Structures are given as structure tokens and as C-alpha cells.
Length: 401
View 1 (cartoon, rainbow, N blue to C red):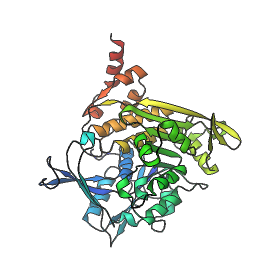
View 2 (view 1 turned 90 degrees about the vertical axis):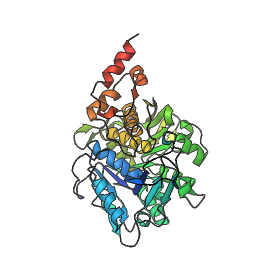
View 3 (view 1 turned 90 degrees about the horizontal axis):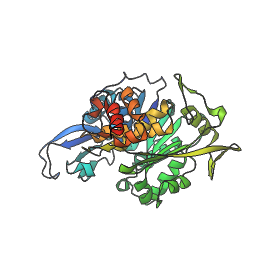
View 4 (view 1 turned 180 degrees about the horizontal axis):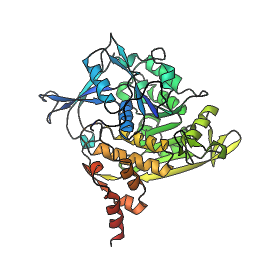
């Protein structure tokens, strides 16, 4: 993705999304083959949270990345490359004693995620993050704070930081948490339980149904919701099939305009923040108990798009960014899921972790398609740069016998 987006914001300004987590320098092979045989690599960047920040910034939102990098050339590259997307990197700190993490991967059959990866992140600068090294005012300065389970696995200090940030307390931003279960990162069997505990404290949770089965033994979206009643919004991803979102509708007094003049909609950002201040709710058959009232629960499934996949890397981060972007704009739940699928489709049709997102007007037109036209849509490489006739063609294909 060519770096685009708004100029970096001043650290004192409120941003839309603050993303906290490790990013690493990625080395991509110049050709196919085993790591032992690849003669040269091209340098890139990769990191779940910074990927989300880059996509949001490229889509026109104010995004900031909080992390720790080494006082080395790789750290310079990360800060410069992520900042070039329009992400505020002013809260990234340097560690003079620990290196920036790096990793290498092969080409392989990346469309099926069958590739070889070698990580060099143990003892990295980012693994030294803790509640004592991160400025809490900066981390909580956005409307949304986006976190990932990857960070929790890096060190005890990182885990302590995530426990503090997911603790329900007055005045905190909306906490978005992508479970991102990575068994290879955990040096303790308690990893799945830790991830579930962190998810309990979040307001928006993203998890794959395959992750939920592997980590928690849960089968199906409704089983995941039963285990995670507290988040106001739970998104369960079903791979190529689609995604299901469970969202509680706010009480009438919770519906307000989102800062910036956009309406929050029935399950809006301000409403989520209001419930976060009150400590969340408990699941009940017809809804969630909250302050003696019943907030209606809605489960919405949206099928994924048909995509000519180039590489599967980065699609989950792009989906989260699309969903959060639509949430910030106060769009209904169905459209939030559709924008997630569209951003994922952008990532799936490029070789690297990051792809240029479609123009907002283009994405809005596609998200507004009727169900039949959405089901016939097929996207391939370069679709984000195509003229805004994609939606019209999809509707025409449905109408044509």
C-alpha cells in the first residue's frame, strides 16, 4: 500500500483510534523456496496493531501508534514507514538496550497461509513495554483504544499493561480487542484463559471461530457470545464464510452524536463508551441487563466477499480496521461488517500486509448493495483503484436473467 492519509496529528490532540502493540521489520523473499534457499529479501513492515492504525489513517481517520522500538536502524525504519501512512508516531519510545523485532518469511502458498516464518522478537524493545513505560494519558487520548492478544504474550510487563488497559474504569476510551491467539508466542498453558479474561474487559471484541475452538473449546458464534457476555459488540469471524456481530442496542438516553457531527446510530461509539463507564452488562436471554433495563441484543451475519486471493496475510487486521472505521462513522452493524469485509478484500488482493483501501465513496456504494448484488460481487487485484462502477455492475448482474 502506498503511504497516504492525513498528516500526523499532535500528540495532545484527540485521535480517533490509538493502537498499541509491537511492529516488526518484515523481510519478504525475492523468490520462492525455503528460507535456507532464498538468496535475498525485500524489507517491509508488519504488526497487527500498527496495520490497523495504517489502514485507518489511509482511510481518512486520525490514528496513533504507541509502541517501543530499538535505538537502531530498524526502529528508524518502522517509525518512518508507519508515520508515512499518516499515523501519529510521536508516542513511540526508543530502547537503547533492546533491539527492534524482525522476522523473515517465505513465499510458499501464502493464499492458504502455508509459508515458513522465522521470528527474531524475543527480548525485543516492544517486549519491555509495561504500565510503567507507557504514558497512560496518551494511550487513553483516543475515542477508541485498539489492542491485541499478541501483546499480552510478549512478556509479563506487556500482560500487566493490557490487564490495566482492559480494566473497566470511569472515563476510559472504548476498548477494542482482537484476540489474535498465537499459541507459539505463549510460554505458559494459561494463554487461552488470559485472552478470555482480557476479552471480558473489552467493549468491542474480534475473534475467529477457529481461534475460539482452539483456545476455549467453543463451537459456534452463539457459544462464543455466551462465554463473552460483557462486550457491547462481539464479532465472530468465520473465515471465507463471513462474520457474525452481536451488538446490544443502547437505551434512548445513550444515543448521541459522535464528536465531529456524525450520528452514532443505534449501536454507536458514544453509547458504547457510556456503558463502559458503567461497567458493562450481563447476558440474558432476550438481551443484556444494564442498570435495571434490558438492552436488546441483535445478531447480524454478513457473508464474506468472493475474492481472488493473492495473500492471506493482514486480512484480519484490515477487517478490524474496516469495522472500526464504520463504527466511528456511526454506521449500522450490517454496514460495519461489510466495510470489514471490503477492507479485508483489499488486503487479500495484494502480496504484503497493507493495501490501499478503497475510496470512502466507493466502499459506501459497495456496502449499500442489496443482498443479491453483494453475493455476486467478486473482487480481484487492483479493485480498490477501479472506477466506481463496481457497484453498478454488481446490481446489473443481479437484474440480468
